[in-house]
Length: 279
Image 1 (tube, helix red, strand yellow):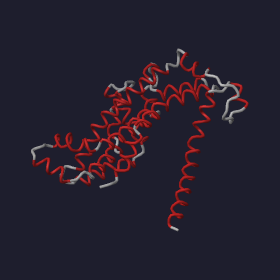
Image 2 (cartoon, rainbow, N blue to C red):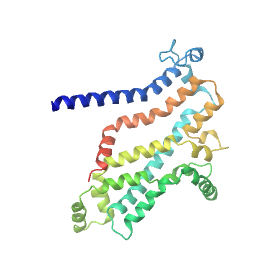
Image 3 (cartoon, rainbow, N blue to C red):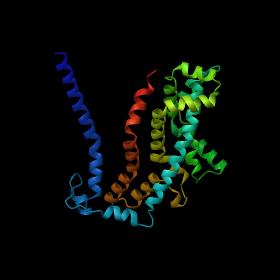
């Protein structure tokens, strides 16, 4: 009786997950199909998932136009997102170590105050940030996309929760052996937190890679060779407003790196998310 109930629940869960996956995949499949259709086929049969005639003309057009340096935009986005992610891991892990391992007055209160800043809408900070970038001389440069986001709280919270699960006895034994905070972090905390670091790195990379509004503001009126991929794709959509095949080809190109990274790190990401809340 119990086994039949468990099996029934598993079947129901499988059906629900299958429906969710289908809803998630349909837009991707439709976008991919649209990118392979002839322009007439897109106009006459926009909802058809199987193209009447497969063509790669939109991808050829995307890479051949001199005013749409897509590979340059991809390289820019990769350099910016990677640099931001590496620096963010350093900043977030140091702050998470302080809020989880170190003991100082008002530690928890300060942490919850920092966490409360996530309730402030991002749009409110745009004007002060733009003013700061102009004063620093960073407006129109990559530094404006790499540095300001290092104060993100999500990665700090994720790493702190993971660090709290590290046995306190390990930390104390390391202190007795003469290790300082840097030695404890490098030899104890870091090796035990690789999965959490991968999860944080993925979210940081994805957030920076997909960011559109802030790069659009920073790169307004600048050379197109400095743009990131989302900014460049928005210009393609604006310039070739009726070329839906070209727009879909560009959009699919933008998500490929994130999908590849997630596919390679899937096991570690799931492990890190699962273990973050375990103490």
